[in-house]
Length: 226
Image 1 (cartoon, rainbow, N blue to C red):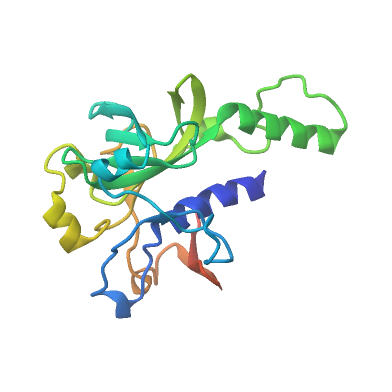
Image 2: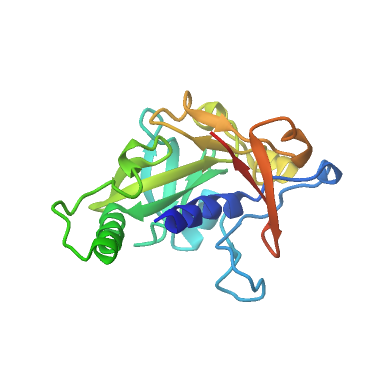
């Protein structure tokens, strides 16, 4: 299950792709793509995502929520039955973040199967946190979409405080790019519990962030110790 969790975290990291070097200070985040893969020419990898609600609707994304006083902020869109990519837009219809949903049933199934593989026994409870305590991890929030219970990871590309207030118009999107930073929601309150991540690699020195390895088409990974 540790490998499974690493895949989830890497997915958010790859989706955002924000940790830059000092040489990139003037570069603009002018696109938004998801799904990492070793072959950047494979059309199933690095799939371009709509950065406005108008584009999302043109690409058959469906709205699943529109709220500012709950666990998640503002307008969320996804393609039918694709819980792996849920796009968040601000009150002006501009991209503001992304979510990744994992079916609770799938998590429980994989956990139970892994426990059966190790113990050769059927577990007493089919719902277990034995190998990874999803239910106690603040970064995983529960949600129900179209009757499916999910664990949700959330990353915001702009300060969460602006999503329901000012938002960004097309001029801001063109000038600032897809986002102005990276905030990970680590709790049930998107304003209070969102943590701003380091944007440049030269700002992680002398912090709890440790440089990992550089993977082709993925870049340098950084891990934070507890």
